[in-house]
Length: 480
Image 1: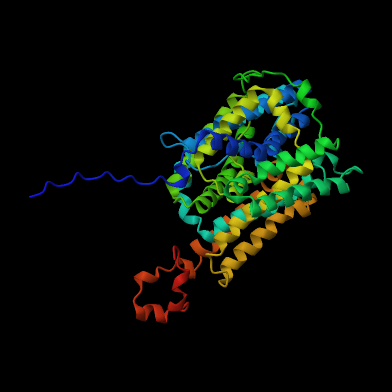
Image 2 (image 1 turned 90 degrees about the vertical axis):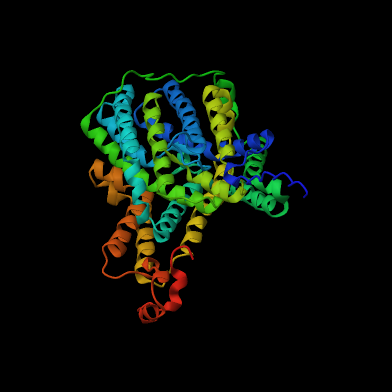
């Protein structure tokens, strides 16, 4: 009898999300994420610092602290440890939802560094609350069917596209000046966008995966040659800047600011849930309630670190979700590399100043594609939904309308109390809340079930044929 051949060990291929790419690709793809992330990342400290009357030196410190903390937050979310971090390629950045509340809190406390201390007390409290509420929020994942997650992502993309278009016009700082909307700005933005599309179409797999990076570098180079890119900030920046805990002093914990920031973080939890499902859709990685809970715990930890290291609340950045969709590079370790780059940029202000030299129109041209891709992912999810069902159609229609309200008719919210304006003055927030609440109203508390709610496998043929929706609609059931 012939001896049995030794059994070969079979290796299961790693999911693309868990693939560790060569160092050269990790660095290149990671830096592409940083370029896509940078402008939005520095906008939050700039808006807050200017509103509280901080000096230029203090403002630079805030930016550096934000970059370092964002890098740490990104690594926590993408790498993950214990039950913290979604282990998905999610880049973390300071949330725009918290900007108005932080400005209101800081100004109410007298502005300057005194206002910052009250802001940081509220941020730390909100971070702990987010961490503690994460398991309960994860259990609510059943209330985020495709009609909700698809609407959330579509709302995020649609409401952020105007932000990209402001950059196309020259940036928010030029609004109201003759320079805003100059033909040269449209030329830079259009040229960058066309270049990205051309590289994606003709560049082959590798070049198309770094099309956004090439577009940003190429657009900046052309602008510099034509005298429209300012590199003067690089010479003025320091070589080394270290963010230390409680740089401005110990935080002040005031009751109402803490409550307001907890409410803000509860709203961002809805946004994070949509981001996690979107990334699951893009990467093909299964997302469940536990994945959402881990992502929210990471948000909580990062937000606590933000308060300690003179920074802000954190959430996944939509720009980078769109970038993953465009580049088709889904490895979470690319995002870990991006986090390391952010930390380096935060510790070396000169390097950060070089990245900041990317002109607004060039960035806007790339952002149009990236934000559009976020909306596209939402539409892709909505394709699984039966929009002939009037309740689903109303959830989408009303949420889109609500999301555009703060952008189109801002004075409605300017007349509201500060606390209300802080919550409802964001299109993303208002649209997201509308989608969640309308889904509860129509599907959780409604009298009849929609096609998506019916377990067609559990019905007999006779029951299915007798159902008002009909057996022919079985393909609308979830997961089909």
